[in-house]
Image 1 (spheres, rainbow over the protein chains, first blue to last red):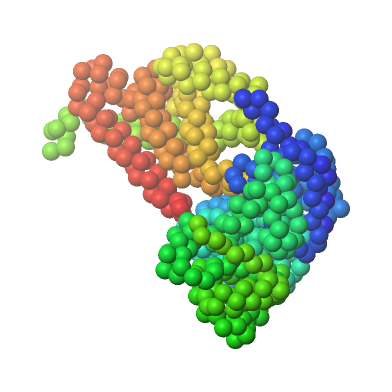
Image 2: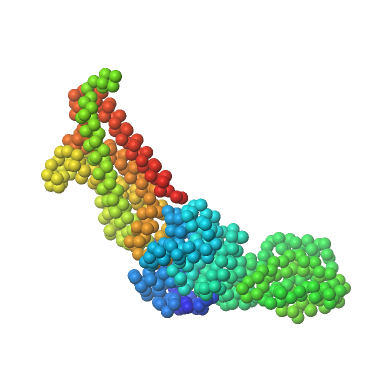
Length: 342
Length: 222
């Protein structure tokens, strides 16, 4: 669907040349949700804008749906853009138009007749769950509702690709999840290819099939989301992974507390990935071995490719039983790490 | 009682003069609105990182605007006498004031249009481009509607300034309340005529401001 070959984007600034995207090659399949993660300034905003020609690469080629976006211009580029729509961090709705009129805007651009516009707008309002709000102005909507309008507007011309530019970064966690669910539904129901950029691992974990990690204009790591999660290679990826697994300074504090309270036993860090999370591993362990288990800290979430998370547990009992329990865990599809005293 | 307070006021003349002032202001405002938006959009779109980014056109348009904005209006009228004569065949009457009024006000308003357009969220323009909008669509469906409250309040300020300009134009023979205040009031030493003309100018200004504020509030959905 999308094929990016060796693209580089250099800006000429007052302080000399700035390389925003540095020799990146990616290929994104039809119907998948592809995430690009990076901190601000990593070049991901430029990257996503290269996909619909809002930015032109200095060198390299960007082919979307068989069309070379980097070379297209004028009417050809405008036509291509109707099939590559975009949603934004700050929604970018026209405040002067109602919800209905905002959604109708891309249809006006595409030259759709008034009757057909009205029909399509009604469908879209229904699809994104904004029934009854059609006559409202954006200023009367919450952030989540505004993004729903943004999504409806982006879907108006039946695009093949949806680009999401930090689409949930301005929303609270709950609203973020509801918007991500909506994107996931759309992806499943109409097979839309979605490319999103974000700085939140949570977003990647929740809906992406594959991910690319960007740093200083380069893609430092890419692959299946679970793969990247389980075996992060680059330091920046490890950072994102620990951010996502919910390890915080509090984790450290509660571990220290446990060490102080229970001098015996062992603390194990269990890293769940994929199907194993569905199995009652811990309760099996307690049944088979004479140990007591205390959950210290944990976070497990479901992703499109299975479940992922970390769990810190304290296992106590006879040293033999504890050792057997740990070797039982090691045999499961779980990565186990015994944490020694800090 | 009114006639005792204003013994020298010829009400028929006063009414004609008020009508002339309103006529000059209205016509000049309408043309300034169109011309100012046109120049303002050119200034905006030719500035850096915009759709028509073009340093030369931007510089030339900007310079022209600055030149006409800097010339004191009374001087501008005199400088434009040959032009007006060529255009209309006369330099007297309400119509003869129009070229100077428009050339004086349009650059002033164009600057306000530029400010209004710069206030538009860049993201909205980017969104329109991402949908495949043509520049003309962006102008008509994004730039103008999204800056409309500022465009209206700007033209209100300009229209009020134009009332003042018509009074100045009146002094060199364009008619209107300024002309009446100067010829009948000042030169014949009839203070009551000057006063009455002032009151009527105030009324015109207040009405313009009221209408402007009303429309601005109506179009602003933010």
